[in-house]
Every structure is written in structure tokens, then in C-alpha cells.
Image (cartoon, rainbow, N blue to C red; front, side):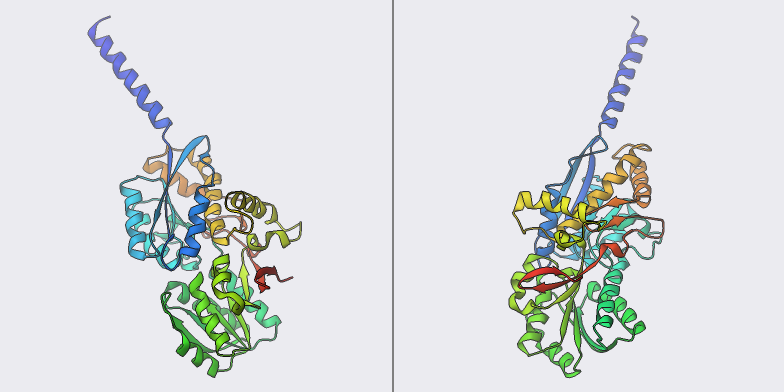
Length: 385
């Protein structure tokens, strides 16, 4: 065999080996979440869930690179940049909170890397503009849950309400959505206050709200910091109805709030009370499937709605990745674009919280089947029928 033939053979062999390596490229999923800091009660079950999700999707091995942003926006942005530039992930999931997720959008969009948020605010995905076309989310919007709360207030004959929420994007998002819907339905907001997630006292704010004598109060907080206003209202003798948001739907909130939570009303994803849902509820089967997996690993009663947001992010990937693989290979710009397109085209994906139907104008894809009203009774979650 002449030298030229040998060289051609060597080149061909190298190309075949390279093609095989590209074809076998793992899918890399970067995750930043809040496993420490004020939002830890939300981020820990999310972190736990990523240890339980499928390790193979579409016949490809999936690497989950999980980082803690300590509930801090700067850390969330730093983690996102690291995952994209150093780890070269195909998609970013995160973060746990609305402020962190909003801060991450520019980084994901600039790098043309799909992002799936596990935070609530509608502002994360709405409107679907040049930046948000790369962003999707799994938790129910504050707008959806505000509809549920106001509907319950109207049916209960409540005409006046006070509002206290986080002094950040989560609280502002809730104020914008709740005030708009409440006003439209004839519920008068007679007082509004704000507080920081790290505050140790909200007495002044609570007293101002109580002076307005509202029939009910909405606390727009998440995790254990949302217990502070509630406990203060109870200590000061407030006797009206207290509503919380779906941001408190975990056992840590029950533990911290204790007896002061009795009678609290909140909207939540179906997974919180899955065993109480009627058998024909469209989400019951998929919600129970997640609960079984999580509680097998962490014990009965350990499941959290926040871990379910992480689970649902992977449900979306299970639907989208096989479609993206038809167009490109992981680790490439083309695959990231194909994955974005596939996420936008997800239809009838059954998650723990709802049935996802994405579109070019809707990067959440959940309808009102993803929300139920819950009351805290005897220290447990009870479905309001």
C-alpha cells in the first residue's frame, strides 16, 4: 500500500472516530438552585429531585451539573455563566426564586441557550420577546394563582383585603397581578406593605394593615420567610382570613409557622394534595408518580411542590430532547437551537403539577387544571372542594 493510501485511510479512520465521539456526546444539563439562604426550603427539595430524575433521555446519557446560588442573584448569574461557558451545557434549569431567574435571562439569551426556570413570576416568560424566546418555566404563574385566590375571596363575600409581600420581584409580581384581578372583581385593597426576606420583624407593617380593618390579608411571600407576617398577625389578634401564595407549599413552612397557620388558605399545584384529588383529575396520575419516587427516597410525607417544579423541568426535557436529536447533536449551537424549538412545541406533557402545552406565545403551557385551593387544617394540607 502506498503512503498516500495509508494517509487517506488514517484520515478516514480519524473522521469515523470523531463522528462516533460526536454521536455519543452526552447531554449536559446545568442547574442553579437555592439550596442555602432564605429560599433553602424551596431549593433543597429541588436539589433532592435532580438525584431522582432519569439519567438517560432519548437514548443519550444526561449529565446534571447542579450548583447552589445561596438564594443570591449575583451567584445565580455567576453560576449560569459558568455552566454555559465552562461546562458547555445544552440547557440551564433554574433558579429557585423569581429575582434570581429574572437576573439569569440576559445570560441565557446572549448565549442562545435554553433556560427552564423553577420560579413563579409571569414576568420570567411574558412577553415572549427576543430574550424570553429562550426562556421557559414550570411553576404556575402568579397571575394564574391570583385568579384562584380572588375567586375564593369573592365566593366568601370578602370585600376588603390587605396586602403584604416581599420587597423584591416576587412581591411586586404578585402585587401587580393580584391588585389588577382584585380590582376587576370588586375586592378593595385597603392597605399594602412590603418586607425583606431576611427581616426579623414586620410589626410596623402588620399594625398599619390592621388599622385599615381588612376582612382578609394576602401574604405574598415564599418559603419560611412568609411565616413571619402570619405569626405577627396572629400575635396581634387579627381575626380575619389569611391567604398565602403557592410559594409556601412545603412542610418547612408548616413547621416554622406552627399553630399560627391553622385555617390559612392558599392556591397550590395538584401534587400537594394528589391523594385527595378525584380519580378523574387529569393530573392525579402524574402527580402520584412523582410522589412515589420522591417519598421512596426521602420518606413518607417528605414531598414538596418545589421539588415537583424540578421534576417537571425534566418532564419537558424528556418531551423535547428526542425531537432536538433529530436535527443536531448535543454540545453544539445547533442542538441548543433545536432544543429551544422543541421545548416551544411540547404538547400534552403530563407533569407533577399539570399538563404542559407550550406555544410560541406561551412558555409556561399550564392551564387552570394546574391549580387547586388548599386550607391548612390540623397542621396538614386539605383540598378545598
